[in-house]
Amino acid sequence: MKWKKLGRIFDPTEHKLSNDCHEYAQSPQTLVFDDFVRIYFSTRQKDKTGKYISHISFIELDKYFKKIINISSDSVIELGGLGCFDEHGIFPMNIVRNGDNVLGYTCGWNRKVSVSVETSIGLAISYDNGLTFKKVGEGPILTSSLHEPFLVGDPFVRIYGTTYHMWYIYGTEWINHKEEKTPSRVYKIGHATSDDGVSWRKDGEQLITDKLNSNECQALPSVINFNNEYHMFFCYRQATGFRKNKERAYRIGYAFSHDLKNWTRDDSKVGIDVAEDGWDSDMLCYPHVFQCNGKNYMLYNGNEFGRFGFGLAVLEE
Image (cartoon, rainbow, N blue to C red; front, side, top):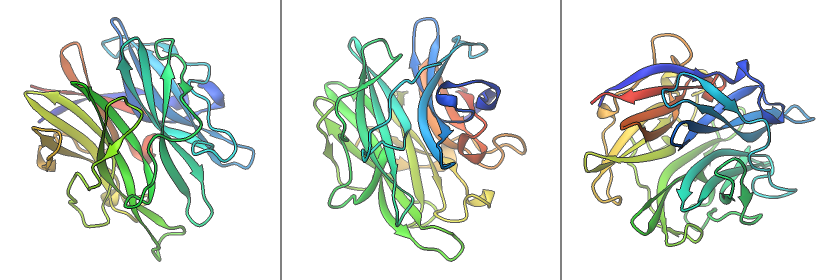
């Protein structure tokens, strides 16, 4: 594959967003309309203690991705209440059309004491074509279990036939490392299915093989179908040292499947990498693949995990 980078198409530091957010546009996810594309993303607000809280915002662009025609000014989805799984933020939110409604699968997070964070997956529904979302309940629809003990998140859902498929991540270990101030997390990609999009059956196994080592962190799977194959793009990194060493930071990985069950990883075919300099020269992360105007596109974040926005690439045939 060969992805042609079209450049950074949104920098949140140049715009006023809802909830007084001024930085970060992480994990861009699309909802394609007839004459424009809405891109949802997770941005950040500082609370009274100076800690970050993640909110969902969106922008709307023309279908040539040249002009921003709208920016959300109100909250797309409210955060959870005291003690809820999404009390301190939602990052990311995956969007799925389902008949007349739009489903929003959320990764809610809340702060912990011994480790930094815990995550679970929630569901919200939009009845106004994706402008706002209402949660189906205060709790998650997919969370930690016997063999996936923590950090269940990063949902990506698609409906094939009558079956809902979800690719997500789950934590396998928290590790203490002498060079890190706090414990570092390790997480892998898993898969679950559902008949109604609410109740899910986990496969209960790691879907994508490791490339770096057993502590490789795999995040944000995104799946698309073309040329009679299913193609997954995700990001991966080392468990430690990734914030200061670009060689240990996120890169985009690739796997393919014929049956949605068995996946073959082959990063040599991913066709996109960091730039020599600029906003995406240190890392590539949080890919989202989608189809528009008969073409395959990829949205992705660059340096500092999307602090300065996201870029777009198109797949060259």
